[in-house]
Image (cartoon, rainbow, N blue to C red; front, side, top):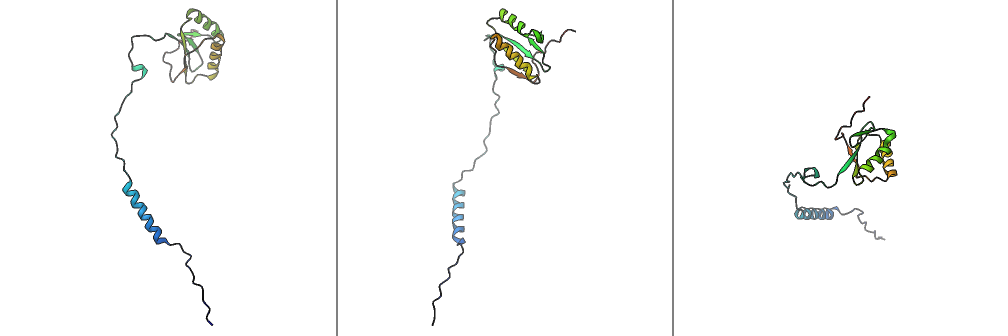
Length: 145
């Protein structure tokens, strides 16, 4: 008696149709791709606020400078540490409408800035944005021994 044997199916994945689909996709992407051409760029030097000439002074400002060693100068005059508040009070009486700008050396101690900001807050003096300088634009006067 002959028994029918079941036909074995191959358990492999058909690779040839996958390769065909891969080539069709590859050709589609190659044909539809737009390659970018290098653009020539102009070298433009934009003007800054320092470069714009003006005849009119917008606002007069005083400068409170702190150098890298923590020395404080108000409008070029050295301020002793214990007399900061009295100097600021006198400055406010002489210049009630003038703005104050803080120039800070990059290496200045942060505690000195906090001390100055605390004194300004206590006296109600509003300041312009603080500028941090790598090197002070105006050298501080040296104390007389």
